[in-house]
Amino acid sequence: MKTDNRPEEILNRLIASTRSPRGRFSAAESYPKLVARLHAYHRQRTLVRFCSAAAAVVILCLSTWAAYLYIDSTTIQTVSTLAETRSFILPDGTTVTLNHYSSLSYPKKFRKTNREVKLSGEGFFEVTHDEAHPFIVQTPEIDIQVLGTQFNVDAYDSNPEIRTTLFSGSVAVSDKQHTQRLILRPSEMARYHKSERKLSSEKPENIALETAWKNGEFIFDQLPLKEIARELSNAFGTTIRIIDPKLENYRISAHFRNNENLEQILSILQDAGYFDYSSGNQQIIITSKPDLQ
Image (cartoon, rainbow, N blue to C red; front, side, top):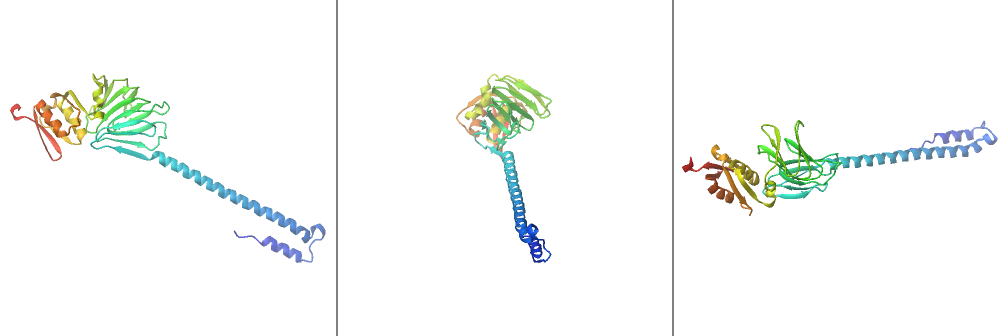
C-alpha cells in the first residue's frame, strides 16, 4: 500500500519557515498532535479496509456454500436394472424395489416441499411417512402421491396401461392434467388406459399376484396370452409378438417359481396354450399350431 507523505512534507516546510507561529501554536507543539491524528486516521482506514475484505470473504464463503447446497440437492441420481431385481433406500429412508429393466431417478437430497421421483418400468415402494412432504412417483402419464404407504406401480413404456396397486395406507392417482383423480384404499388398483386416457379402479381378487415378481415368480391365473407375453417381454427384455390375433385372448394358468429362463417358460406354456414359437432377430414370434389353423 502506497503511503501519502504530503502532510509530513508540508509540516517540515512550516517548521523551517521563519513565520511559523509561536507557543502552543508553534510547529514543535502542533507536529506531535497532527502526527497522532494522522496515525489514528491511517488506523481507521486500515480497519475499514480489513473489515471490508473480511466481509467480502464471508459473503463469498456463504455464496459458495449456498451454491453447493443447491447443486447437491438438484443432483439427479438414477438406479437401473437389467435382468434382475434390485432394492435400495432413498435419502428419506423410503425403500424401493425395482423389477427387471426398470429405472428410478431421484434427487441426491429432497429439498422441496414434495419428495418427487421418476419411474420407468415397475417398482414397489415402502414410503417413509412424512406428512409435511408428500411422496410423488411420476410416470409419463400419471402421478401417484402418498404420505407413507406400500404400493406397486407397473409403468413399462410398452404396456397399454399403468397399474397402481395399494397394499397399505392411501394414495392419490391423477393424470398429468389433473382432470382425473382417484383415491385408493388398501387392496385396490388404479388402471390408467393410455389410449383412452382414462383412469379406473378395481379390487383384484388376489392382490399378491401384483408383486410375485419380487420373489422371482410368475403367476398366471387365467391370464390372456397377450398379457403373459407382455409380462415376459418386460421381464426378459425381449420383444414377443403374437401373429395370430385369435391367440391373444387365449387364457392360461401357470406358476413359475424357480427362476426359470424364458426358453423354459415358453416351452411349458407352448403345450398348455396350443401354440408354436420361434426366435430370431432379437424377438420371439408366437404362432398357431398348424393343425389348429
